[in-house]
Amino acid sequence: MTSELLTAELDDTVGDITKIFAEHHIHHILVVEGSRILGVVSDRDILRATSPYANTVGEDARDSSTLRKKAHQIMTRRVVTVCTTDTAVEAAAIMLENRFNCLPVLSHAGAVVGILTKTDLLKCFLEQIAPVQA
Image 1 (cartoon, rainbow, N blue to C red):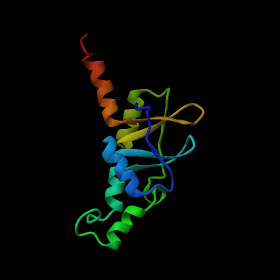
Image 2: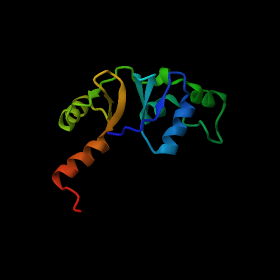
Image 3: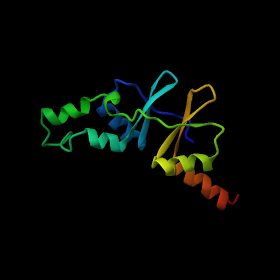
Image 4: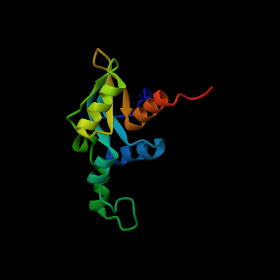
């Protein structure tokens, strides 16, 4: 799990989120209010929401307006989460069943404490199969 979270707020723009994705090489961002999760925005959500001409020479006003959409307009609201006590196998099963690429991780109190991605799970499983030699 990644516990150093980059998050967005409901009114953050698609343009701002796109910059975060590019600068930090991430594909998902949690939309939060305080420590409460409200949604998830993925790079696929961004692709669906923006014009392919945005930020290009061929951009017009309609194209650039897509970058001003807000996180709450494009985020996935049906958020499935896991708890810090859930196992990697349980999380993997949820991801496979729902075809998710990430799961927010919550504490028992319901606060967001991290995000678990398929890459995190692959690393975990590889360490189980072939532990790193010291």
